[in-house]
Image (cartoon, rainbow over all chains, first blue to last red; front, side, top):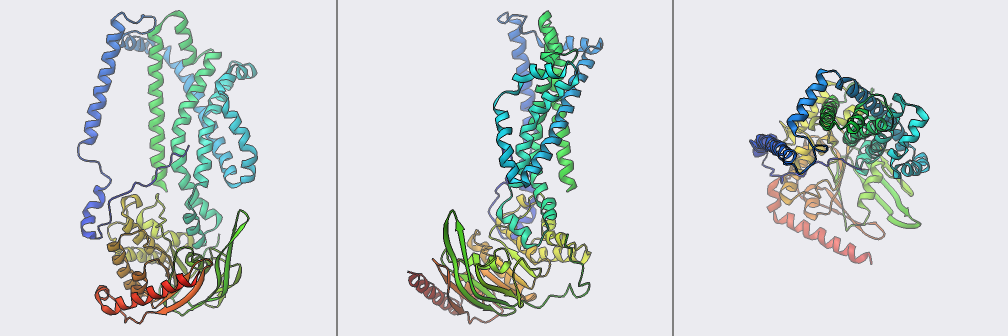
Length: 281
Length: 272
């Protein structure tokens, strides 16, 4: 679970600092044009995927009940946007996901912090949390719906349950996995416990927590969709279930595209948040 | 939060170098039921302004002795005192540099050097100016805004040393700070360390496993033997100061190295 990035090893010390003076900045820059090449390659892959999709869909090898051509999907997507049936469903799923995600992150960071500073409590409670991770939580989705009804609550709960664990483990790791040298340094500087927390452990934990947030967001989305599959009156999962029953395959794909746009948006927001938090420190 | 706000004046002046007294100090570690005697009845006096190296085979307790002086470990028996005060916790007048640079990777070079000031609550601009000055002396002008991952090992260690000096310690403790560096970088950093020490006199205790480094830097070399760790002998280094690069070609330098090596061999043999 440790996603910490260790500082990359670098060129040998040349000691002739004059030479390094110009080299300092270049050490982290990628060779010229690498970004452009990656972008061109990405476009190429995208076009190839579309072409493959189109060819497979029109070849007659796959039933149109399973795969429809991309053009048809885009047409239906715009249709769903135009007739207003996309927004309520997407909005419901987004709301459930974000609420579940937020709940999970707050709970995981709080509980993780308590665990990080109380090994006794951690050792006592952690086995139970670990055990709760060994069964697939989607399996209890029907139970949760039965307990909480058809509304927002069961979806948010499922989303939060799924998103909780990676944030918890990475919070604990980020707050506790500091080297002996770092602890010695702060002790030698006569830092108080709070100073050690503020200047060492919290910044250290951010490198662990932010990668976990990305997986937590994806897991929260899965939780929300599964909740909607079980029982719902609205939401992307609900819509997909309906479309599948009525054989509107293109609409199902359109919903998936809407979901991945939402997913990309979360990813972008999280990356931005990480950059802002790191700059602020 | 203990914030040092006192001493409004005179803090910028270099403080008087510290004196160290080590009296019959032993340190035993107990791990999984078995006890290891890391250091046994060590006695050592270090005069103010002296540059002393601790040298010996691994397991001789040289790092343990340094950590005892730093207040990072407590002796099992005996006392360590700095300027007559028994050391029970890290003292404010002490700067420490470790074998690993131990820079915080989310702070820039300048912010890393300023960490001790931040912990002390010292926000005076002249202190920050001194941090820049130290970086310049260490040959790192222009690297203030870089992050540790953008530096080489030698440069990181320079930053670490600047950090250990930024609150003008009267005693500098260095635990194999150049152990992981190549020979050329190590010699450069030795030169820079001596320059710094000559400009601002302070007591230095320096742990190393390099005989030539110990001879080049020190007034006195404490040779230790292993299992249990003991002070075997102290060897004065009679080479004149100030010392520069040319000393490394001096026959007297080689003679001193030969002598220390002989004492070290004797320590290894005597430990049996």
